[in-house]
Image (tube, rainbow over all chains, first blue to last red; front, side, top):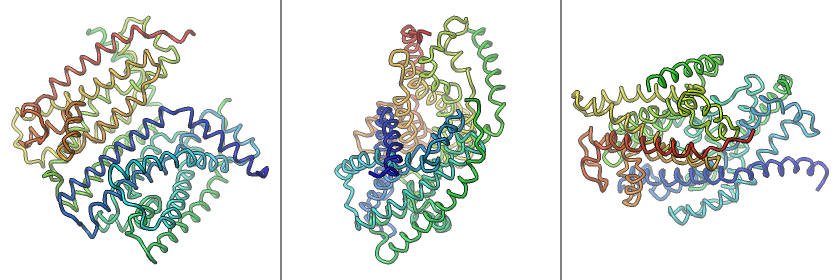
Length: 263
Length: 266
């Protein structure tokens, strides 16, 4: 490994160890996701009430959507904002800034560490869901993986933008929670966009959150395919690029705001 | 008893003044509490707007149940929210202080700080309940209104009793937040939907735990619906009694576990 990669890997490795220190938390979290998954599948079955197809979507496809969306939400739930807020509040950010790797890059390493942690768990829960709920295989596996990766990148950028507000406000508890809850609705994790009234679905399709969950899961179930699929992936890539640019701009300004309290 | 209450109020006043120092945070925390509970309802509204009903329940029926459940949740979360501090206080040995003071240790723990997001929950619950109750197909006689109030308190005591009992285990194990979080997740997720939609094993689980007693069964009783659960008809009116039982059990368990507190050696 080159020195550049080695430096960054040490951050990733460090964060993986931090996450592993709270094994019971992870277990509780997985139980929460499993409970959520079972509930959504049961709810859709009850809502379909024996109708085989609604809006051109068969029940089996809808339950697959609900299951995969729950797993995507798991993938995209990370603690960057909490982490950074705490470092800023107790002044540890001072030490972080003195490190040879930039603060923004450290956060990206942290996000990568969480990804490394979560992928095996998601695969595990996904396999159980496939057997228990009857989730079908992806319609276009390669495009689904690409779209999931782009969705993850968009979500990381949104997280980094939100985290940057901590430099100004020092406190993100309320905002963070509000964001976490709202993004479930905005991303299509709770309800797919095609079920929504057209004004709401249309509005959400112009926002970045649908690129996080709705696009990859729609590709998974084959609702997006062919040229529509590639243009949706193009939209994801565009959002990722625009938001990444915004993150760099905002963080460049934000770091100058650091006030180390005490310490 | 009266003296405990007065001491509790004095302590609570101090906690309120402490929280009021952070004014900007007050609003965002309350909004977050309200939004957390409302987003689930918006999701349900989106689904029912398209599909009309779920298991024979229309939006106005579901809204009544949701409002009842939210208010019941706030009914325990407002007084008991400081239970989430228990691990921290046990680990740091802060319970020592409570034991040498004349006020009941539980009262001291609960009045330590005020978390405003639970008042957001309460406001959202009450507003939703008022709107849903006026639109629901229920003839609101004084007896039914009285039952509604008792059901809210009973539902709150069911959930709160569990939380208190689980928190008390912290005196032995130092940590129970994951357990409490999971139980709260179960009540939050499964308490807000008609229990009828689940298969028989699921229905039995929700009756035993007893998630269905908090909002689903009382709402069935108010709407004059058959619950579809393998339970007798009077189960719809059981929430207040069951709540009292579980809350008393939770408190007695707390008392017994408090004796196992060991301090932090500091």
